[in-house]
Image (cartoon, rainbow, N blue to C red; front, side):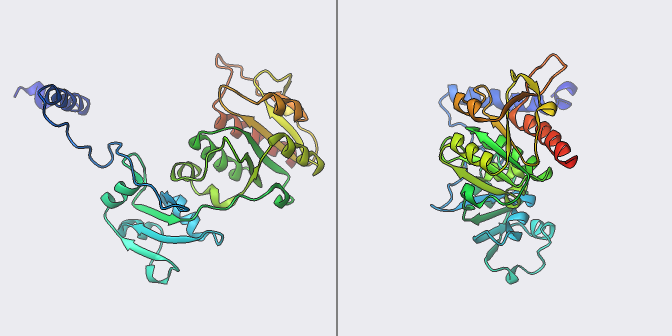
Length: 284
């Protein structure tokens, strides 16, 4: 082996491994089995259950009295980081495991941090359960759980009281969504409506001023906000707001982008919009 080969980078080693696997496959040999953390799929949760993972996500779920929890799987180190000194005092089963056991359940791509919770999903509320919050976010067929989770996290950070989605064309609660929300799933009302346009009309009756985010909107967002209650409405990436939604909101507004890129990922657009809405409400 030459000195150059001895000092090869991690990337070189990775490509060498791929080349060997390719040669093995061409020679009729079996492909190497994937290792934990290499992208292998996890196991499905039992019907009516959901697997949540990650320290912030699991800690928030445990602290949520509305959660029905069946079992906690955790490494000894993760239990310490969750500040659980006496697992026997918890009202559900706790099993100490090695990280590999959680890899098999959550999947190789899941950043579980040594902890997984077997729980029932939260039950979405009807729009009639909306409290007196002055700020809500409504999503028009945003289906990516990473984006919805990130929007949940930002919505909670800026004090929004509810996230409104449609019963169809919206992601259900999952480990991916909850991990992206980093615990925020437990701190905000999840409201489901069958028809978003009808839901927006109900928000109008409740005193909300609804603003639809549209890159081609006629007005800048900051100048479009009115009233003491605001509902921000965001559409899916690419498609944007549906025509019926555009026709129902009180106003269409844009985020002005002075740079060469004139649009944002929907979760980033939600963050900027929530910041502007919270500043507007703080002045009221």
